[in-house]
Length: 240
Picture 1 (cartoon, helix red, strand yellow):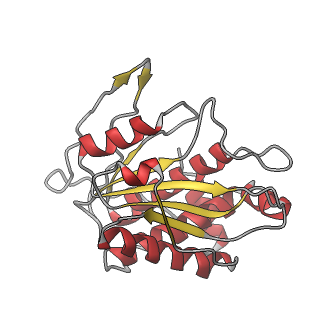
Picture 2 (cartoon, rainbow, N blue to C red):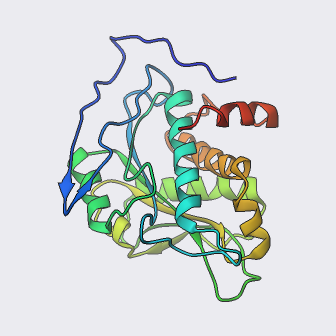
């Protein structure tokens, strides 16, 4: 289904290769950029939480939150680039260690417009499940709007219990200099939910809900791909 955008030199945002070397860590650097779309000219950073030696929460049968976060983050990047023309940076695009300070420093030095951190929750009570989204305790109106729009789309798609939207003093929300949110789309500690999170198609549909919330935040409903299962799998074949 997915076709690459026609290359238009006059409309392509120049990709600035930014290389951070910090305590032996190298950031991927070059953003994914598309030629045109509803979000052309907008610069966003996606932050798949945890990674490397930090697995995040671990499900009952061993599914790592870090791996799910990355799959959702890569799907979200592809949606933003291919369907809306946004310029998208990633705090990580593979399984690697990235500190909280490195994540916020990247975003601040690049001057991106929005920061979206992807997470999945956990509880000692395996029956708990639900959707949460967060903004900083003293967040701007833009942060709150982005949080609320993404929360609404995740609720509409997942049909899970609503547990937000919320505020918190998480590092990536407190120390980013642009509107920022953190998503906890479901609980990986719930056995049934863990089994769903193993499914790449489910991961893609979670990313699609977040993507639609971002579009709503920017007051556009353009460039929403089909949710037809066959088209979804064709889309997934093009992911990195």
